[in-house]
Image (tube, rainbow, N blue to C red; front, side):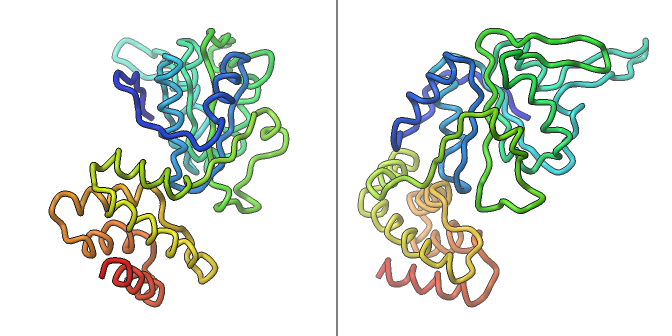
Length: 264
C-alpha cells in the first residue's frame, strides 16, 4: 500500500476524453473502473488525476491473500492493551482521498464485497469490529483497475460489483502518442523512440503465436532508459523488452530476430 500527495504533475498524455469523464465522475461521487492491458498507463492516469484534482492518493496492490481487515483495519496488541488501527480504505474514506485498488480481480470476492456500501448513494464503510460506520468525506473516490486479458471464471468481478462503477477502457496509445511518451519519460531521441514503437507493434502481433503478454509502454520506457544511459540498443532491447516477456525459446528467438531486423 502506498500513499502519495504529488507535488509535481505526473506526466500523462490523454488518448481520448478519459480526463473529462474522470473529472465528471469525481464531481458526481461515482466510482471508476479502469480496464486495460498491463503497462498501458492505468496507474499513471490515476496519479495524474489525483494531482489534477488535488486529492491525496492511496494505492493498494490487490492479491489472493488480501483480506477485508487489510483494507478496513485491525486491533493491534500494545504493551498497555489493544488499539484500533485504520486500514488504507478506512483512512481514504475519512480523509477524502482517492483510493486506488490495482488489479482488483486478484482480491478475494469476500474482500471486494466490502466496497459495495462505498460505491452507491450511501458512501459508508461499516467497521464490524468496532461498530463504527464511517461516512466517506467529501473528495473520497474509489477507483479500481484490472487487465481483462487475465480474466478467468474464478478471477472476475461479480455483476453486482461491476455495475457499481463507471468503466473506462484504456489501451496502448497510438504510435505517435507512444513515441512522445517514451521521449518524455526517458529523454531518448526521436529515432530511437520511433524504432522502439515500431518494434513493439511487430512483437504485439505475436500474441496469436502464444505470447501471453505483449510489450507494454512501461517496458519500452525502461528499454529507452537503458539505451540512453550507455547500453547498446540491441542489448537494451534483449534485457529490457524481450527477456521480461517470455522464457519460451522459440518466442524469444523470434523476438530477437525482430530486434535485429529493426536495429540494423
